[in-house]
Image: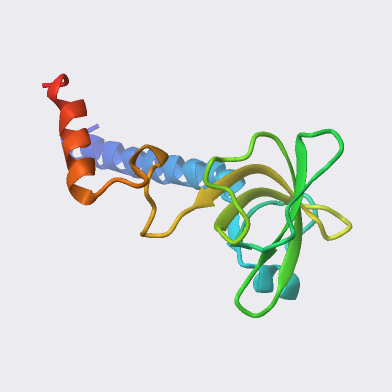
Length: 153
């Protein structure tokens, strides 16, 4: 076989391998993808029961309730259009998780319409201040930050 033909065969094999790797990666990622739903989207077009999705919205004030086991909590996630989705979560709540705050719940929709969360991500607004810095002036907070970084240099 001539050198020209050998190069052509190698280029074709490389392209086939590249396309195969891309298809394999796309197939693997398809199974790992979880779609994001707002409460109004979940009510209008709910995902299949048991499909892994994310639900984002605000925790409705007055909806947070701890069950008798002390670990399971139920609450309602609301959206902009007065839509609400009941959520059940068993586990340790994030520190920033409070009524009226933003939340992203990862989990699955149950057959009864309740969203069963495996993981909660609490969101905060741009005015968030860590507990250690609450009540401090901006100058005091800057001094404290400087003191904590002096030993790291």
